[in-house]
Image (cartoon, rainbow over all chains, first blue to last red):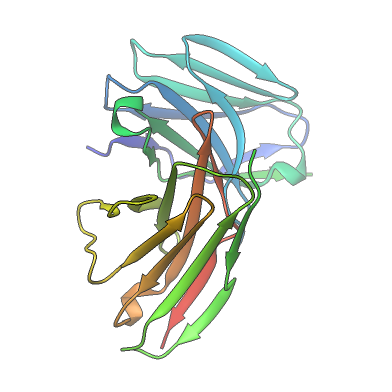
Length: 112
Length: 112
C-alpha cells in the first residue's frame, strides 16, 4: 500500500463546475497536509495547507481533512481552463522533521 | 514564502559524467530538501540537508551517488554522480517555512 494515494485521473471537468480531488494516507501520525498544483514542466506550487479536521476555504479552493478516516480532499469551485494541471497531495509529520510524502498526483482537465 | 533560485534549469549530460545542481534561498533556513521527479511520476525525497552536518538520505539513495553540500543557511548543492539514462529526471530543491514547503523551479536532467 502506498503511503499517500490519489486517483491518477484524468479528471475531466466542464468549465464552471466543481472539481473534487481525493487523497488517502496511511500514517495515522501525520500532522500536516498540503495540496500542490503542478503545471506541465513546472515545479509544484502550494495551493492549500490544512492541519486540523474540517474545512478550510481560500478563494475557489476548499480543503477538507478527516483524520479519523485518513482522508483529505480538495474542491475547486467554478473550475477554469487555467486550473488544468496535476494536483499533488502531500502529507507530513513534524516528528520526522516534517518531511513530506507526496501522492502520485491527479491530473485535472477543465474543458471550456 | 521563500524565493528559491535553482540552476541549471536544464542540462543534457553524457553517461558517466557528473552534474552539480545549485540551490540558493533568499532567507536563512535550517533544512533544505532535495527531491527527484521521474517522468510522469510524483516527487520522491532524496535527502535532507542541514547546515553543518551530513545530509540524511532516504532509502534507496546513497551519498556516493548523490553527494550534497550545505555550506551555509542559504545555499546547497546536489551532485548526480556517474550518471546513467535512469537518472534522467527533474531534480527539485525545497525549503520549509512555517511547515509549508516551497520549491525551486527544478533542474530537468537528460542523460544520453
